[in-house]
Length: 273
Picture (cartoon, rainbow, N blue to C red):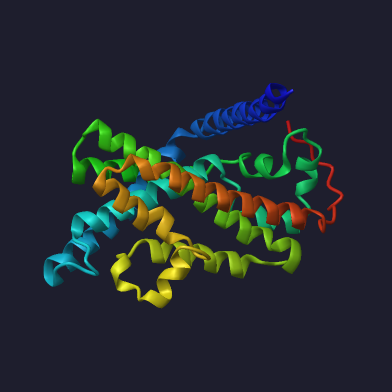
């Protein structure tokens, strides 16, 4: 009996992994149908991110280390944030549209599907420009740390929980639409706070601020802690970050399910294949 009970959750995990893989493949195929648009957005995001690197290069050359971070440290933080942010929006492209979908009654379409509503709605879209963010992190890594395979593997492993934390945090903010109606101001503010706090050296924040960076606005888990793990090549802390990501995902999912009980149908007749 114990073996059967263990097999059922594992079977569900595999089923959802296959579902998300199929959704990703479909979204990617749809994106590549418009190759010119994809290329323009991809390289446009790379150029946008490169402007950030140029700013920090000039600043650190003139002032020296900022908050204990040299130029390579700042670039590695940016690399983690960029790749994690990009991966979150490639796989869970609807994560910052969830509030609008709730307000417009768009969940009706997903409630008719056999898969979990939260997973289904978040993974049913991909963001084209996010591919530029995703690739930029690896480009920065190659320029700052070389092409050592162990470092690339560790970087990729650390980017996954970072992406889950990004997705979970944004989804939780968007889920406030169930309770507040239009929650766009709150979700937009949280998005800006998380990105802004993640892109500056941890040392510039005082003790009173740092607790927030490891709780409400979890920038510490997507930028600063991954940097420390990466610099020490400590694979043992990767499962810790994965556990932290699982906690944020669980809390975000719980908030969504709580809000779903308050959802009012929009009486939409759409069909999703």
